[in-house]
Every structure is written in structure tokens, then in C-alpha cells.
Length: 225
Image (cartoon, rainbow, N blue to C red):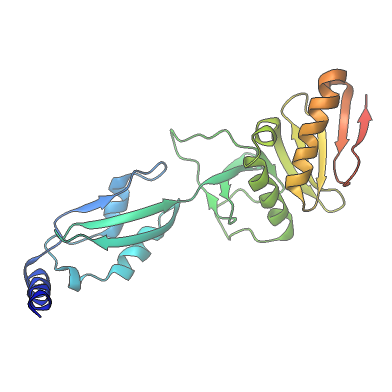
């Protein structure tokens, strides 16, 4: 009973006397912490139970590159914001327009001093409008996610597009060889690309290759120069 009473007294004291004096944000790559603080717009000196945390989260999540936010008020009254950023997986190219895109199809502006070396993706608008959800993007998204998990695939792919007949089509970094990956099962197809490169291209030379078709389960079809 004594412990319960002490806890109640502590809670009453905390609610009456503790106020928000500092906002703490985890280290970020794309978003400046100052911008997070400005978006959160916490009035210092406010009591924690008077703060609308849902509204704080909504304001911070409205920033470019912010995926999600969780909040925690420390016993001292400091507000801790745990911010998860969006991670670009490709660079959309449409004429002179360029913009990053993440795995959810959200287009993200290119920030000064934050240039990333990512595969170029063709066939989509490169302006910051609706989230991409069509089949073409979802296939390219699945391919890029698997390629990023495959060090060899990620380092050997330079450009990606989607064709209604051929599915995901990529160009190799080296010599711009056309690679046909089709639809789905990209983890297996990227492994087949790695095996083919190691066993065949390293022997024959990539300059002899014009096209490598990896769409089929048990065979790799090539077109040579």
C-alpha cells in the first residue's frame, strides 16, 4: 500500500509540476533536426498531459523523408521523438526531371549535399505527386528491393525500366548489356545473373554480350554481338 501511495504522489507531482523543456531527436540522414523541431512546434513550458502528441506526430510526418514518428516523454519532462526516415531505392528520370522514390512509391526531392548513387528508373513521372502503386512500379520496386539485398546485383545494375511484354528490364553498369528479368522471383533471377556473370561472362568477356534473358527458371538465353 505504501508503494502504491508513493507512486500516486509521484504521478500527481509529475502532472502538476513537470513541463516540457527540451525535445530530443535521434540522428537523421536526410532531415535536419532543426526542421523536425520546427514542425513539432512544441511550446516549451507546457505540461505533458496538455500536449496533443497525435498532432505533433502528424506535423512531423508531413515533412519530406519522414516515414513515421513515435514519442516518449521522459520522467524529467523531456520529449523524445524517435523518427524513421524514408530511404530512396531509385532515381526516377523523366526528361530533365529527376526525383528519388522509396519502396512505398513515395517520390522524394533531391536534397543539396545528399546525393545518392542509385539505379536510374525510367517510365514514371519525376514530379512530387501521387504515390506510385501501379503494376509497373510494384514490379520494379520488388526487383530493386531484392537487388539491394544482393550486393552483386546492386553493384552491376545501372538502369531499370518496365516493359509490358518483357517485364523488368535493366542495363548492366558494365557495357550497358540489356538484362531481362521478367516478373516476380527476382531473388532467384539475380542469383542466376550472378552465376552467369561468374561462370560465363568472366570467361567470354562482357563486350561479347548484347542481351541476357533471365526470365526462365532453368536456362539463361543470350544474344551475342
